[in-house]
Length: 225
Image (tube, rainbow, N blue to C red; front, side, top):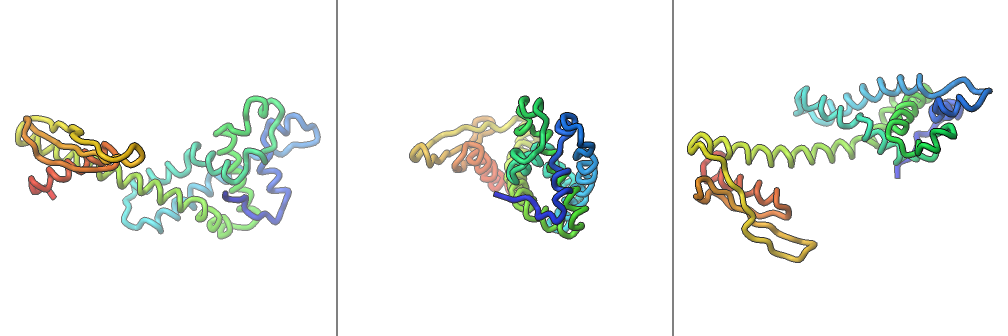
């Protein structure tokens, strides 16, 4: 499990954890975490962008922008907030707690941004950069791996569809023709046909992997690869 960054100024950390609903119920308090959230949002956009720019030199602007958007979207920040313990640490009003605020994605993501803004004021940009690298690099690597698998799957089937339409004005038809192995370790065999003529077969641990392999086999036979 990841941890909160190491603050030197405990008051900044406390402010970052303080939601408006908590301040509204405490007459002696005036500062909530919203300004820190604003600052953290800007710092996250910059540092995550820099991280991706350096880590993925082959990616173009559109790919980098899409990946950064996935990394800093509310759901992802909320998940990171849970991982560093914000669900229990957030200072919320009684109403917010009653409304399940400790698991609310918006509150978790906002508080995570506030923590980043506060840590920047506390320890500077390099400290925040090092902290974010530890959190975001594994997530970025996982997302890129998923995108690569998805792109390969889409490209093979799209390319063979283009070939089939150009040559026969017909779409390829995929079918699972065999399933082997125990329930926890299935292997699927797929085939792809055009106008009922067999063009390729493939195997995989999932149906989509098998149909992708069949498309790749068909492309090889058609000398597209």
